[in-house]
Amino acid sequence: MSELVKFKKEYLLMVGRMTDQVFQLIKAGQSKDEILDLLSKRDFKKVILADKEFKKAYNELNGLYGKALKNMDKFADISPNTLLAITKMNQAQFFDKMAVDIATSLKGNLTSGILGGLSKSDIVNGVEASLRPDQVDTLVTTALSTYSASINSLMADKLPKNVSYVYTGPIDKKTRPICLKLMSSGQLTRDQINGIVSNGFIERGGYNCRHQWRLFTKQTQMFDPKGAKTEAKKRGISLGG
Amino acid sequence: MAKAKPIDSMFNKLTTTQKMIKLGEEMIGMMIERTQRGFGVEGVFKAYSRKGVKPYWKRKQEGNIKRQSTNHKPNSARDVNLTLTSDMLSSLKVKLGRTNEDQVTIGMPPQEAIKANAQELQGRAISTTKKPVTEMEEKFIAEFFDREIKKAMKDASGRTEIVIG
Image 1 (cartoon, rainbow over the protein chains, first blue to last red):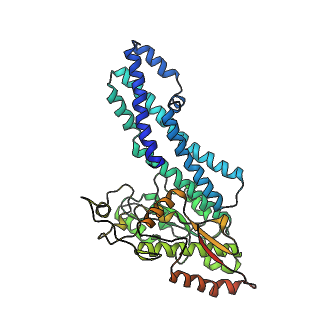
Image 2 (cartoon, rainbow over the protein chains, first blue to last red):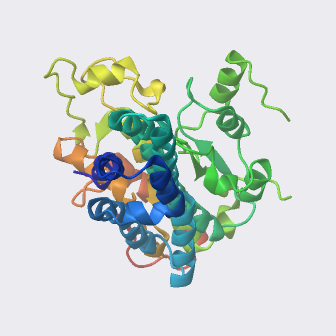
Image 3 (cartoon, chains in turn purple, orange):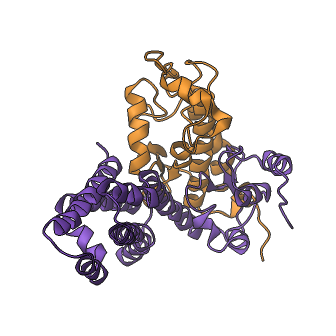
């Protein structure tokens, strides 16, 4: 089972266990006020990471960084401090955020559920609806693809400043307007790209983006600026100046 | 702001390692192109399985898989292009740490390499350790050195390797 599949499974099981614990308190005779007081005072990120099974799966997911890091080391001769900084930034941007999102969603749903007298399954469903397993997929996919895009940036550091890059990837109904704009712009330098979208060389089209910047050569594939313009026209999207 | 120029136009000013990066990027382009045409390093890719109520190729043909690139929907089980979201092929990169004046290394990050290995085990290898590139690609590399590197380097000596890492 992959780290991601295991994490999603443990996430759902943990939500069930946490909700169970709160209902045990009700069973034990604690009042709504007491339970709400308890919920409001606790740091839920700590609470969820105190759940052994969930923490194990979370750490394994974080371990993907270890693998990526090992791989990245082979991609470039960069200092351990730079690697650490990239890793920490990426972890804070995605994985820590995910733990905070899960904690906030759980705390919010438990609080409103207890207040509204909802059933255990209603609360669990509420948590799942506010942070669905497929959204966890999105966070992880984006985290790793952003991490991978930073390799392109390292490569750009080694090449002349005015060398051109092109935006490559699929053009279809799902392609976002910003991605259509970036692909239809043709050849750009890294500075020009970052001028169109802040940190666009690494962030690209944002969450779940299927595109990558590539050094432009005669062999470059999945680069179709005309197709991007046609798709934009078909959907009535203005690509601006 | 400097005007964007293709790397080809500044070739003679590049260092040998930069030339190797360019070669690696061209090789990646060639590998993606042949993969999307349905050819692996050992020839035509093995067809997708037709077993089951709704086999994978049928689901891919419907085009409803999350993040799927609808440009790459198959017409039949034999239409194999290894492109679902394009994440795997897009992740092919020149590995700078293992690229120098004598070699260029191309690779994928681990999460994508797992997918490529799984395909290889099913008879759809993009590249293998034993045979990293096709004969045609080998010819391209040889021509690259004949046309460009030798012309640009005074002392082109030693062995140059293409490594798939």
